[in-house]
Image (cartoon, rainbow, N blue to C red; front, side, top):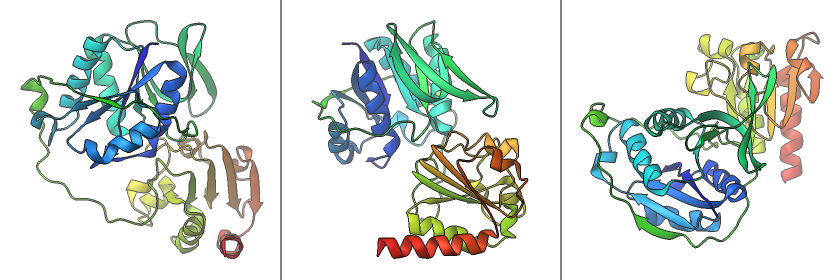
Length: 318
């Protein structure tokens, strides 16, 4: 069975949900092997094993720490050249897509980004993408080199599958050129207690219609155990941090449930959330473009609707 490499997305060894999703996809395509960059493999080992990693390649080098993505891409390229895998799967976040782009150049391979599904078809890896702000659904394959694919979070439901998780330390040589951009300081964001926006199964977003009051948006998100997002209009007005902006110039999310509160539905915003599995909109304007996209729509005052919905959610949980 052909080997499929999965770049582990982790924070200090804590494996993110995106990795379990990628390992689930990798099992469709061949034999999944996790690529762990860092020294915290002890914290990640059990999680990788539970989701079917047959091998774990551990790349632990001082040359891979405190630098931007270039050393990681260079190290991964060396591993690809040694193992000749059937494909490389990477989480479709900002760092993952940059690593994937660099890796494609270094290995002279085809690259597909932001896939929402990956399947074997007629002996080839085939992806599904939503492109041009959702105007088209594209089926694509890589015709040159090793297929390198970045997959959007929540593209699949992670499935448990006990793997052998055989560890193998990998030595790599990193060029001086790759180490010219060094990280000199880190300032972690204050924890909110909510899931990461890119990984959340439920996202509740507020827009211009909130009038700057996100209290009801946050309360409903907390009642559902979801993340909070915002439209560009809301962040440009200073009502919510830019790190939570969803849309063409912000983050792209694909949760199981997306709730748009007070968001008109401009095409730029739709580009960042339209692959969500179920979309609900709350807006007092029945003619808002967002209603063309949704599965369920509520015409009314978002604060009243969200407050009532929060009470109902909390009552059911109790």
